[in-house]
Length: 515
Image (cartoon, rainbow, N blue to C red; front, side):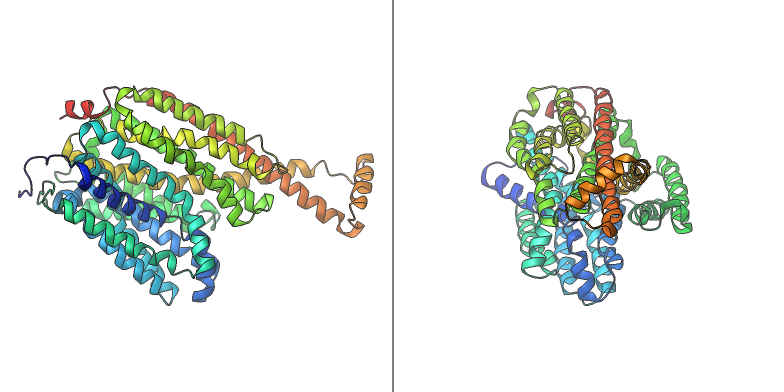
């Protein structure tokens, strides 16, 4: 064993702390932004590179697949090479592959560079959280986590908006080029203030078996989630094979890592009560939050007729209140029992979900946006407190590994939510369409009255049935969206008792007590 530092460094203060926070926050924003900024640009990218839009989606799935595989490895990599060195190198490599993505001249090149970009991005967000916690004074750690939490919350919301604006006003490579100045600044600032504050380095042997099982299991799972809807899920032999592979590989991974002396994924963290139940609560919360964030803009665009820009704006209002409230929550995080804060958060989530479920296809922009805006209150009381709860009973050397697993749960939770929510929404839409279509009877007296109404609207007899079909589908998909919102409202209520299985103290005192 060799060490870069045997004792924890004194927390930073003043200008160095501010600059470090800005640098880390920008790097987090940059990485999380790249998980969604490509989404709206896929048609432009596909057209520019001469492939179909379906092939263009590989620019999204290749990144998420690689990032999901790397995040659980964060703790092992940080121990072997040091947190500061790993973070700085990750940011610089992210910048290089971002530039190469923008310079790609074929889809094969872009997919490869996006894959590499995802691989090097894996440790960035988990280690940013670890660096914040280790370099903030205990009494200000909540504020540091609040700033970190805001970037994690806001970035994926604004990704599609920024991606669309850059693509429309410049060209799609600029969604990657903007990472270059941000990443260079973040790397320079971090290395300048942190190079002499490296974490303890432990020269551990490589767990080759665990590494292979991790890549195979998580890679298969992520690939299955990314392509399940396109391939009609388990009616496809490819999806069945991926699902079986993921289950077998991950089962063997758990068994192997529990007995391995130097595991690549530290599953012993789950022995900590607050980490275990906090992570479960966070995973379910992410599932619900992402589900709504996926279905809401899809419904507005495909059913209500909103443009991508207007749907993005109606969705993005959720990020306004967290920016204002999160610092206040962070400043006072050590003064309250965080279980009350999280109960309040999920209550707001539930109320906003049930509120959203009352919207019809005739609502105004403000009526659509208000439940999302209100949901922002819940977000401010969710990400910061849940992060504090998860880390509260861990020892300092466990934080990097815990952050990696936490990031992995966020990524996989979002992927599962996206896949499951889209499938459930479409399935409920087909159900409601079938039920509504049964009431369309051209032999009934009501049909004659409705036919007269359509004629008064200028709709000809030849177009009446196609018009009725479009109205029926619109109502069916709206009813399906409301079903989904109600489902997530119930889920948020169910999560609350799980969070009460955690035990105080939570803040810095809890962390110190666990040392």
